Length: 306
Ligand SMILES: [Zn+2]
Ligand SMILES: [Zn+2]
Image (tube, rainbow, N blue to C red; front, side, top):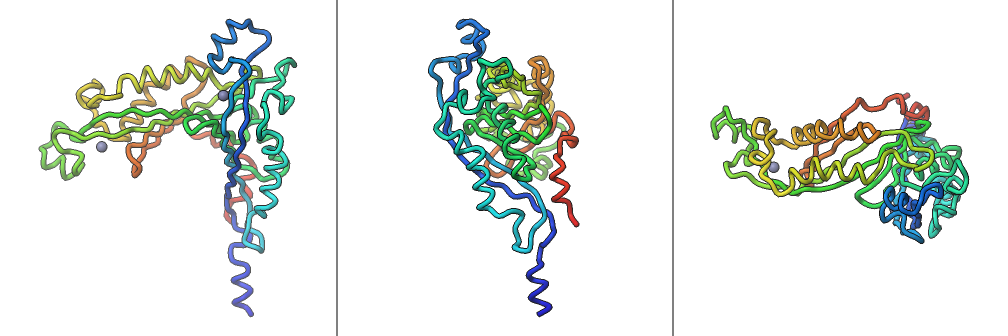
């Protein structure tokens, strides 16, 4: 009897973060009535074309709380119902500019339905119903926004890739010593990887454009400062910085962060994080600023150990 009771209580009251994924398809158009047709085209590129274009969005909802007597933070059917009622039923197969009045740009306080503006508005609709700690919204596999509950700040990530060769060896050491430290990676003629680079920036969402920063300017910076100089190179020989510094995944990620930090600031955002994936088995992540601990929502307290 005692044993049954203790099994039934296993985990009760202890904190846990759970996630739920939901998908919807929707279209949008970036067009501000106060700008001329030429200015809209210059500012938003192909996203300004009429009548718009669409994406298959993927939403990841993270929620925290203590386990109940049934061993759950929340009943998943209630979670599904809340996400459906507040988000996907309203947005799926809709034109986002019309779906929510937040995106009605004929009104002075309307804003464009960008990924970051959308994830912010989804938070506002879901947070009264669910103990959300974080939301992530993918517009496509290479572009997503994270929102953690700060009044305005959101995170925007773009993913890109380059192919490059490298050799891990310190010039002052013998081949034998290098192979002891770096293993096969120290072989004299190098080897290559298809690197994936995730660049995350943080900033306030502009109340009119809905943007943390000009996305095409950010993409240009990553292309000009990372992809163009690194792609199809032998890093140790072709990138002067790596003639002196061993191009481990960690050092490459740090160097990318150092290259991007100032220029990202110049386009009005803060470089937050760079993640470099070298292979399916290893990746390096560096923060260009301290994690924003003050943005941790109060709901995280519910997940604290008891
Ligand atoms: Zn789009
Ligand atoms: Zn390697």
